[in-house]
Image (cartoon, rainbow, N blue to C red):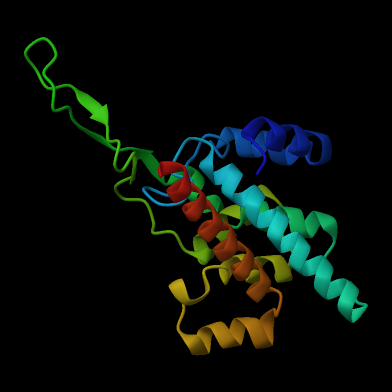
Length: 196
């Protein structure tokens, strides 16, 4: 997995305007979750980079095996990198009282168990909000918007709604869901193995 500086450099070289817009909203310092995968500063960008690599591999495999062109390299990259964009402004450090007194008081510190919390009043993470926010950063094709809206799959939709997205609106949305889920599971399992 690439580190934040490698992701920034790649984006600056290939998508300079995108990098600048993402810097402004805190994309490169945001976590990907509160207490699961990539719950550290820069986790959102690292997670999205992992999704991009898997999504690109899946799309390229289908294109080669079917002899068709599905998405441009730019569409693959921006769809994957922006699939969770709503999370860039959704979390804040989870401050708790320290168990140790300092100068007679218990100071506030960042929780080690759950370092981030959802900002009160923010919308829940959904593909809808991610697509809405992404469309304000870049011009999305209809296909990209559908893929981002549907990327949470069964975690957000019932089976009939998923089937509608994947069969009728964008079969490639399923590949983005799979790339996101695979990246998340690999990140979670890597973290668990490192703790052993």
